[in-house]
Amino acid sequence: MNEVIPFLMILFFLFITISGVPIAISMILTSLVFVYIQFGNLADLAIPFSRLPIGFSFSLLAIFLFIQLGIIIDESKMGDYILNFLKIILRKVKGRTSIIMILTCAAFGPLTGSAVGTTTAVGSVLSPQMKKSGYSDSYSGTLLAYSGILGTLIPPSISGLVYAITVGLPVMGVWMATLGLALLYLVILLLWNIMFCSKRKYEIEISESTKKVPFSTILKSFVRALPALAIPISILGSIYSGIATPTEAGAVAVVIAVVLTLFYYREVNIKSFFYNITYKAAYQTAIIMFLICASFALSYVLTSTGSIRSIARSITSISDNTYVLLFLVEGLLIILGCFLDDTPIMILLAPLVSTILSPLGIHPYHLAGIFVFTCVVGLVTPPVGTVLYAASAVSKMDVSKSIKEIIIFLVPAIIVLLLATFFPEISLFFPKLLNMI
Image (cartoon, rainbow, N blue to C red):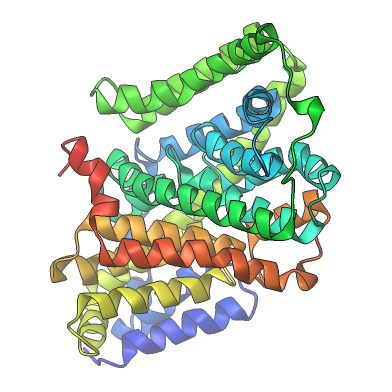
């Protein structure tokens, strides 16, 4: 086939996407135009849709269940109890409010699986506290955004789930691959924040009011927060033990969350609770599923016509050094992250990148960790950083006046990305520990 056609196809896709056509529609239109150019027969336009039945698989039901789980957590305010417990435990730590923000976002990860949900939930509670403690709006908003992405890095996460399904890897394996990067990022972000708190004199003194809390208060706060931890434990435990698939584990977690909400925490209106869950979960799932099904059409055309092989030959002709190729992919993902959310990027590029790089000796889980992490970092890069603007909304931060802070906090993410690129064990540690490799 003509080696130029695949690249013309990509340029056509980018052109109509930039022109304002929704990404899913762009993928379908690109598939149809490419098939018509390739075969010149109207009957062949049915080819891109021959793979759509894959979208009705049992494994994809997990997307709806984990979205539903995150909404339940948000509606029930279950995470507030974890936040309150951390505030008590860390009351004597310098820079405690900012540290609480980071740790709470990390704790929300296994509960919501969503960066935007984590950012909104934590920010609405802690942003006022950050302001009272003397932090600037720019600092607290930026820190919230970069902490919020922990919500979709620490498993179970929707981003990891989408990547696993689109590439065809075990979901648990991808979750464990991102866990190593998430924990490293958490540590580096904490140290980075502490350094700047000391430099800018944020909460470097401990007031007398923070020193005395009765043990009974601490115990009561712990007891209220403890049941929420049953949710991530039930998910990861049931999957790793072989009792359940990710879809089944998601269903069990939803049941546990509903029971806890209705019979333990009991702080919601039941009718409104179920209406919000059903509507929001169905709406968000429909968007993702439309993207996934459209990507099936495009990826099938790319594969069946040999376009992927042409693209692979062109990319590998640039260099046979795997690090150079990884840097090229990471740079592309960061640039795309300035304009797109992580889900469409993964749906569009993950199968292509995996097909090209895995045969070159890059372990699929190593690539999974880097790919998901880079896409998630894109959620906080302007001009279209979903998490950044969610943090801005709840913290009253002016993004245009906070570029310096955004760049400063991008450094920990870049450090983690470089370390993960040169040291595959960061991504592979937990999969190997759990005998997945």
